[in-house]
Image (cartoon, rainbow, N blue to C red):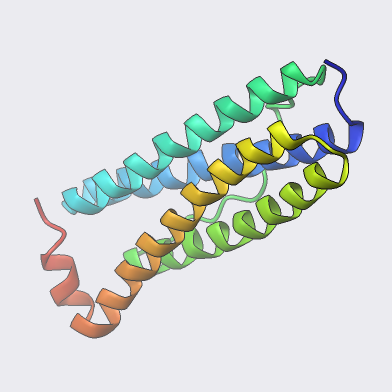
Length: 155
């Protein structure tokens, strides 16, 4: 199937976001593992795997539409030197992703590609969950204080 060139370009931009997110989350996961925060490690690692699945879906859709997936371009990766900065960088990345997916959903609707639109809505729902999880962790830090929060993340 021949897809809309602007939509394929947008899907490649989303792919660059997902590839960056994979790397950012996995580095944060490994840092937390190194610091002994096993629960945070698992949380970051799980999110990284979900982002990998998003990248796989985007690659498949780009190919279906007759495009060429661009996997050599990554958007900025922000690595936090401590847990609060990690969570804030990840929250900001999810905020950008949510906006980008909403914009892409609107474009897919405009060009009449409802199948791509549906795929993007499913990914957007995952990104919304990621945002909720990150905001929950940031709220816990605020409510408990950082030292107490970190004691809950050991193990």
